[in-house]
Image (cartoon, rainbow, N blue to C red; front, side, top):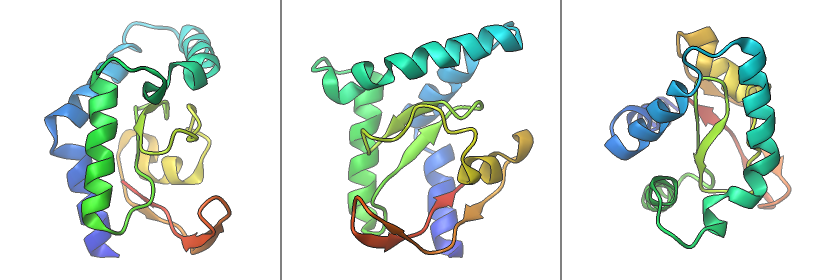
Length: 140
């Protein structure tokens, strides 16, 4: 478990492309009121299924990051889904096009974010119906 947490933590802090997307996503909240942020997130959540990078043939930073995440997951051989969010739990990139845009209510996100202090979370083993396999979540 410690090895997987370390591997996920390195993914979160090392690649410039991943880090840049998260920092850019976080900047959109600067100077915004809570109400403005809620409206922004709700609006983007509505648009997310249509604007997902797999629907956009033009290369973008999100599409490049998604490709990087897919390759990273394939090389590790242990990850079936990799998701990157910003400080509000909004999706930045994911290897799974079905990942919801808003994740702040998810247990894995709350435990990993730890109210801005950061932490690690490993869920209990559960059955994933989509994959028809048993999986657990690792979040940092």
